[in-house]
Picture 1 (tube, rainbow, N blue to C red):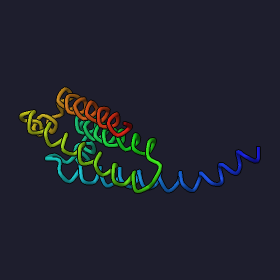
Picture 2: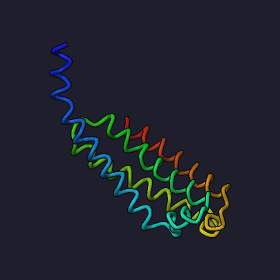
Picture 3: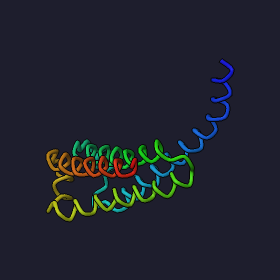
Picture 4: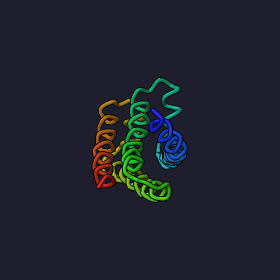
Length: 137
């Protein structure tokens, strides 16, 4: 029992710092994502637009997946910071590429087109899983 308590005492502060760092990266990633999107997801959500809610929720999850892999596989906070930033950049570039490839995406999301929302989320999640796999090595 003493070994467990000693391990907890030594490991808990590291866990808290690394989790907080990863959570901060996620918040920054979501803020940047919301700044670069051509539509205003929160306004759409408040208006009851399901497509906007799906896109926002899917984007948050897609940003979190590679960050979680980085958190799980990194031993040092600096690794989490560096690889977390790389993961976020890749995910944000995925969104930019998807919006360029899916013509009329903004109008479809703003009109509440759930099919378009799921298509965008599917692309983001697929790349997030690949990104996480690459981060996990």
